[in-house]
Structure formats: C-alpha cells, structure tokens
Image (cartoon, rainbow, N blue to C red; front, side, top):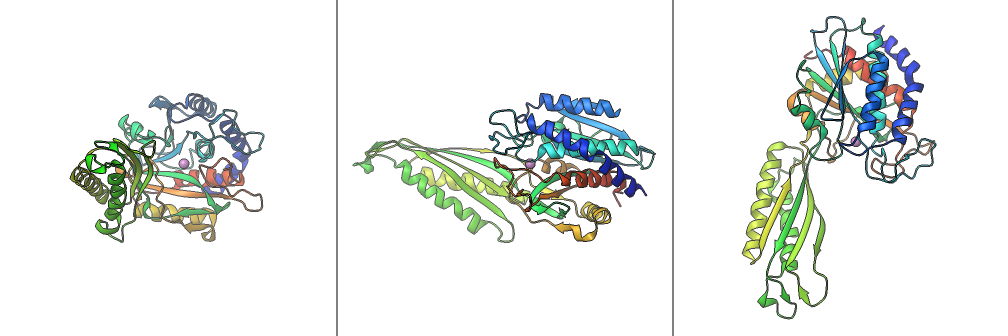
Length: 395
Ligand code: NI
C-alpha cells in the first residue's frame, strides 16, 4: 500500500524533478560556494511546506514528521556541490558557468532528495517517525561538508538511528541499484613531501646532496609500505602523482617536491601507515644527507556500511525494485565524505544505476561528458522515500 503510494507519487513528480535537475545542472556551484543552489533548495522546501534550517552557510537540513514522530528518525542525505570541469555535453541544460560542471551527479542527488521530500511530506500520515533531509555542501573538497555539518550538530535533535545516501553509478544500468555491506569506499589523504638539500654542480655530486636521486629512492621506498607492511587482505593504495625539481642539465637542484595520495579501507591501518610514511621518509631522506618536510593532509575517512542496516536497506530495495534489479556493488578506492556520518551512526551508502548504452550515456563521473539517463530519477525518488518511510532500524 504505502509502497504503491510512493511509486505513484514518484511517477507523478518525476517530470518536475527532472526540470529541477536541469536547473541545477545549468547552474552549478563549487564546493562551499553553493549559495544559489542552497537558496533554490530552500525555496522548493518552502513551496512544499517543509520546515528547514541552514547549516555551514550553504547546507539545508529539513524535518518531516510522520505519525508518532518520536518513534524513530531516519536521515536521508544528498550532496549539492559541483566540480571545476568544463562541460562538453551538447544539451539544452548544459552548464552556463565556464569551467564548472555537475560532473559527479550531485545535481541528480539533490533533485532526487527534493522529490523524495515531496513524496514523504504528502504521505506523512501514512508512515511513522521523523525524516531528516540533509542537503550537504562541499562533498568534493576537504574538509568535507559532512564534517562541518556534524560539528554544527546535524546528527542531534533529533539524532537519527540511521542514515542513507545514494550516488549515481555510470557503470550500472538504469533501473538497477547496488549495495554492499561493510567497507565500501576508501579514506583519502594527501601527501606533500619537500626534499631539501645542498644543491650544486652536476659534475660534482660529491659536493652536494642529490635531491633528485633521494626523491627517486623515496618514491620506491614508499611502495614497500604497501607491499611489505600492509596486510594483503586489506586494500590500500599509495600513488605518487607529482615529482617536481630542477630546471637544467648541469645543476643538482636544492629542492624536489613530491605529491601523492594514500587510500585505505581500515582506519587502524590508515593511521599506522601515516606513521610508517613519516618514519621511512624521514629516515631515508636524512640518512642520505637531505632534509624532509612532510605534510599529510588528512582527508575523508573510509565509508563503512553497517551490516544490519545494509540487510534492511537491501531487503526494502528488493521489495521495491524486484530482486533482479538489486545487485552487489564493487569495492572502490574512491572517497566520499559520507564516511564521516558512518563513523557516528549506522549508515548505508548505495548506488543508483544511470547508464544507458542505447542512449550513449556511459561516461564516468568527473569527466566533461558525464551525464545520466534521467529515467533513473523516478527510481531514485521512490527508493529514497521508501527507505526513509519503511526502514525499521534497529530492526
Ligand atoms: Ni560524487
């Protein structure tokens, strides 16, 4: 019954939601600068008669109370920011802002959550508890909007028992969803090394500390952290992505800079690895006669889907979509600031298929030709609303 009512309303509001998505897509804003986007979300919520507050400048947090509102609170989260990418799609709703694009589908997440809000609000005499809608800024940039909202109390008053978030998945066909329990996405930390030494004439290396050679050895040594210190059953990546130093053939430079990323699934290993990176780099560089300056910019934690909540979510999704349309999603070394929520309360981050090969919609996220099959929006609205209304957690 409730399921069918949600289905009907998701269908009814899908065209409107697609228009909303077009508006958001045409007017993308970078992380922490989502002022127009935030105002737009607020205006929509006002239209629907849903009360809200703002947080962390551009975040919007709304509450819908159903029957017996104190019984449980479920949070539903959408991220709202765009990326510094020049759009290449030739669509009438293409980005109107040079060099800024919704290339990660956060326009889709935001419109889906607005659609779900409308459905849940209209049916609020049909379900129990309270739904907290979180329109979150700054997913794409450290420190992550989720961490700011949590500091401002987004998980209090009322405290949700569980939180759901979805992400569009360009590798999964429209009409399908995918779930995974436990570890889902990696933590991501940025590494900045500066190796300083006594530069000098390239013909007299004995009179200098060769920062190029030392940095080269450091790149190799760092790989041993992954190959020799990490538990082989625990996925982790360390990539050095930038190596800069020197400007000519006959001078040993006095400074070389390296940059890279470190990713992990296990929070214990993550911080142990930071210590190893620091120790090995310091010992190697100083042992070879240079000096090291290392900055580790600690980014998002890994995303962990609560086992019990995953079971609840997958069962509800199967009920709504049919079991054949609910798949297991692969582990990813990408990062998501949803991990901040899953550190605090049980969470489940799932994926919405948006690929349509027949329509040529296959580009990956963070590319200038990324797009989604908008038929997925009706599915997204329905499933998000259904999870919010029907999830009993703890079961
Ligand atoms: Ni994203």
